[in-house]
Image (tube, one colour):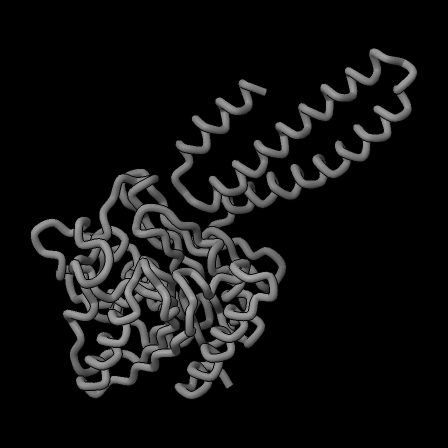
Length: 339
């Protein structure tokens, strides 16, 4: 067991791709359960009187563990070797949209081939996060007939990066979708970027920030999305907002509210009024400046809700998730992204 724990800590920390690490971690956890059950079996066998009970418990446990192990390892295998691979007709795992040093950045696509391509970025303060956070949203959008993509980007805890690399990766993801529009069956002029918290910041920056592209990018391909769907996003990175200490001498360098101008894509923002991580005032100010610049910006307040309220598993009845999704659908319908 100690050996398994060491392997889990050492090996999984070396796996930099979030999805591969998720499935590997899960597989090693299940393997640990497998070993425990074998140990229990041995204990029961030593006492013959409890052999039948021990065998029954162990066999039942082993059946579940084996089933989960097969599923986990199969999923990890698909992610490792699935460049362009389709799993059934609704999920495509492992499109590499970028590579920096030895880090591969991956997209997971859900949905039938249709003429729209929204993208979701997970949050985590530019430090952590997982693309799986927005899988419920992606599945919902796929059910609406959209091609939904969840993008991994570099973060400090795994790659030692700054918010600037996060934004560069976000721009690369949009460019990848646009440059592969024909292959993915999407309309390159109907790409929606979205995300939560720091992921919402990355999405907002793809529309507002003109600099900080990856050096190898083809800048003739636009990295600006055609609409934004943002969940309690970081829009002010100064002391009035969130993350000022991460930006050194110029906290406005990646601060979307400081780069609002005419011609930005239509935007909808969901934000809790009791958010103590990203002040509600920040998104009020952002939307006000957007409207002053003759852009469309809809702010949907959630009274008394705190940071991260919109996540699928935050509430047992999924009420806030369902409400935000309903507003999102209406926004996308109004702007011609879904029927």
